[in-house]
Image 1 (tube, rainbow, N blue to C red):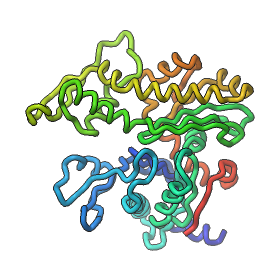
Image 2: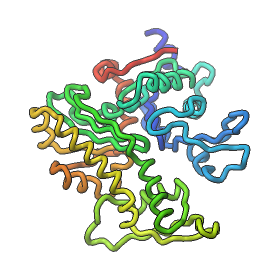
Image 3: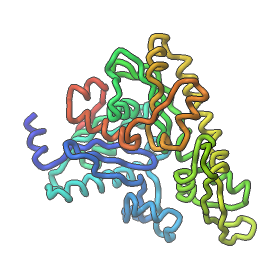
Length: 351
């Protein structure tokens, strides 16, 4: 207890949503402090990090031969441990420097989100990465519970909550009741695979190759799950390489084409939601039918997604408030209340 009080003078407690596409960090008692892409740029030989976050993302596809810009997480799990440690160290140090705290003894207590579908080894890698980034304690909180807490859903009531959290690397579909996950299904079908589908669609249809940032931009700007009636068809210009000539080429892409590329993935998510509903005990199913399905995560903002799922499973859907930030807010909440951390069964490690 004394150690905690001592370190609290020199350090922050941090809630961390470590996503495949983006990292969000909340300083307990102060709010969201970091919203950056989960990208690291480094020297290929020495592995020295030269850029992190938004600055590194701008380098994707543009680096000289001696540098590489990478995402250290893939499909919700760490694929490059050293790069993940470097990413966390950078932001932990940056947050303490900006507040004039002593870097040498700034060792934050951290609550960090993890997907439910990963192995114990993969969970330990996340915990070790936070500890190696100079955290003094690192607690793991399952993403669905963190998202539900951050969205202020009544997960401790004796009633069922169905939450679909669709991020960049994974989709978590969970029935939550009495502070725990009753049924869960984790899919690799998520935002990154949708971006890849857009690339493949344009390559096959127009023989034009575009990059991942361009595909993500198309998804955000004109992507949709359903035909939005009453609106003129949206168009977006994208630039890529003509595979037949090797020369640059511009395309005018329509919203219906992007929708065509995305629908197979959306149907996989709907199928998984239907499977979860079929496995749900009748008592909880009645609660879910009454309250509806909650959507969170970046992809939940895709136009018409709620209507698409509702039409298929015959249960109303709604997007939680601030779906991008629900997970990180939930992580910060468990550090503010120790009893809450025990309720959500967060596992911790100490360095």
